[in-house]
Length: 110
Ligand code: 5GP
Image (cartoon, rainbow, N blue to C red; front, side, top):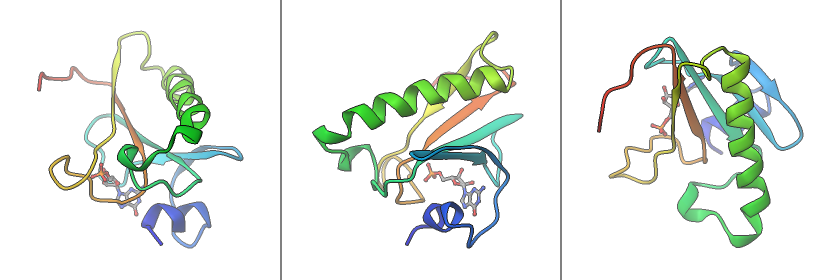
C-alpha cells in the first residue's frame, strides 16, 4: 500500500484541500513552490505508464480537476506547472499516480 493510499484511508494525516469519490488533493509535505498540491486518483494506478484505455475518462477528469484546483488557489491567472513523474528516471518516488500542481513563483525551463 503506497503512502498516498494511506492518506486516502486517513491512516496518515495530510493537509487535504479537495476530495470526492474519484480523487483527493493535498499539500505536498516538501513543497517546491509557494503552492504545491498533489492530486491523486483513489484508484491505485501506479503511474501514467500503468493507465489502461478504460482509465481515459478518469484521466480527463483529473486534468480538469487540476485546472479547477489551480483556479481555487489563485495561480491560474499568472500560470502554473503540472507534473507527473513516471518511474526511476522520471524521479517518481511514490508508486501511485499523482499530478503535482506547482505555482506562485516563476518556473524555470527544463
Ligand atoms: P514523486 O517524486 O513521486 O513525483 O512525488 C512524490 C511527492 O510526494 C513528493 O513531492 C513528496 O514531497 C510528497 N510526499 C511524500 N510523502 C508524503 C507524505 O507523507 N505527505 C505528503 N503530503 N506528501 C508526501
